[in-house]
Image (cartoon, rainbow, N blue to C red):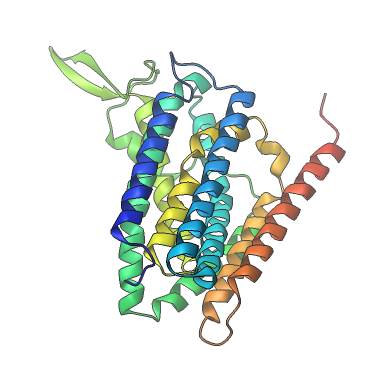
Length: 323
């Protein structure tokens, strides 16, 4: 696996991740269970975005002094493109989390613990999947075509399903979990398990919050399958792939609370995400025929996502509010 990173770069990155995780887990929204305000979420979302850009700038500065300006520019653009792609696709994951919490009527003040574990699970899962993916591509180059076709079909499917109403009421997985687990019908604060007396003995029951956690973690798996192949169209350097992915995931909890009260305003965003997947899938299918510069991919992603957000906000202002 060829990479521009040396052991020190890996150490610096993982140290930074641990520090950022500690801040996110023990500082952001600290204190008793409460709803995170939109203002607080917006501030911290800006902080995480700024730190991600600062990391990219630091990477460019280090590479510029060690391997030269040309390679530094290339890797910095690859990192930024990968970060924006992963951050954009993560928004769709956030919308799924909103649907899960809404379906099970989980109050905002009880969502923090689930989101913390969800983010931690996503980091561990993606780290494993990324190294496995890089190794497989190094051994089997043709897998890039498989990933490309998968992303192209996923983008087309997302486009035509963008306006469909999602729901969990008839979801077979939810029904299976509910029928195979001992679950309480009521919440018990932030607890995932409670003990109840049954037939003279204490039996452990899961709470609805446990079921929500399972669904959140499974959604991470599903979205990782979509998002990780997308960045392989930009680079197969494991350091760039991993750093752009992890930096996009960090602060996802703050972005969730920021979007929680504004989800309806981004009605056209799914179309933008679908176009990004189609673009990236096409790029992968043509990877050995046409070399599309990473800067072109970066510009296209920014334009597509930016336009879909602008059109969504414009549409929400023009839509009359029901009384």
